[in-house]
Image (tube, rainbow, N blue to C red):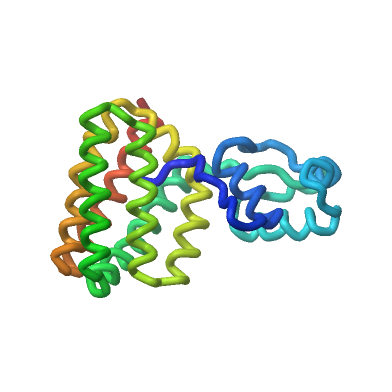
Length: 219
């Protein structure tokens, strides 16, 4: 399960769209918060035109919405939509797991297994932030190994839209113990180069996330 607060890329200048997207994903901009063009332009040293273009991109991604006579604001995703988004992610990431199993090199297999070992150690130590970081790294590496660019873009957009619910889920004390065996099953299936098992394990994991999101909302 992926969670928020990704580390900013310091190797290159981020676009205004990327900066605003990161702020939304990290929770620095909260649901229903207004995004006033003049304020955003002043904060980021951008022109009003650049801000307008960035907001339009984020509207297309579903992260921002425009309200008649009130301007743009961060869009609040409903529980039902968050569950649906997670289920769609399950389908797309299952494809990536399948492709990763087909394309995996020995070096990449060692890397995935090392991530799995580090995740086990983090759970044993109760290092939840470290586990969450490794969680993100695992999902990202599987997508990179799969080399499915359209799927990667789709997953990135879906992840951002439902990130608030995933973050709430990640704060549950027992969540790492539940998700760890699922992640290890994904790693093992990919490393065994079994596309069907890899796809099934990823689908089972993200189905579990969707169910947990619903249960957490009604707890």
